[in-house]
Length: 264
Ligand code: BTN
Image (cartoon, rainbow, N blue to C red; front, side):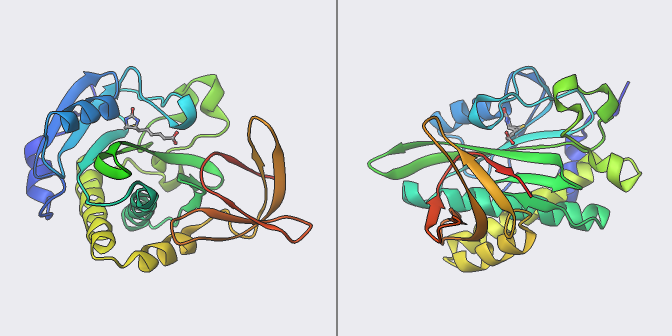
């Protein structure tokens, strides 16, 4: 039997003022994002965290699933109520990516890279992903849920075939078991730090840190949509975290959402 998360130990380690003051821990759940969106609709406080030992229907971006075996990794969703426009919401995902990268660096001494928009990589393998969902009205955010999945201790050899070649875990790369409670407490405090920076309006600082972790800038990339596919060099980000792509013709496109392929 694996050690389960110990909420009172986590609370003792937590030094935040908003994020994680309320934590709901589930042993098995379909998706912490689904639960957090429902809690958001019924008025849950800003900073509430939904945490699970395992997910049966963990959601990834673009309709994918997130492999969520029990007791090995971290699956959490944070409910936020920022007074912002819809167009600004992407920067919260950017802040979350910076927090995850910083936490990994502090916990393991390994500096990960961030593949746009928010895949956290070590040696080109995905160790964490972020899925932000929100409810809005009149172009404003009502509430928002930042869902984070981090592969801490899972053995990649026991993961499903389809992710075995692309995923990795922090244990694989650091060579040691990661303390899940300690990692979570650090992650929540890192996230609170960058969320407060975001709320204070220092958005450029978040973009600078994100750019520093980027594994995409400087690479040749391909962006596919239903109708077309474009290629070019990833040459920067706009203020909201959109990707600037320089085509061979010199034209610069701004990619606001979607998925990219690194081709060199
Ligand atoms: C991605 O596709 O990279 C995003 C993955 C996000 C997974 C996390 S696990 C916790 C939270 N609950 C979910 O259902 N999804 C997110």
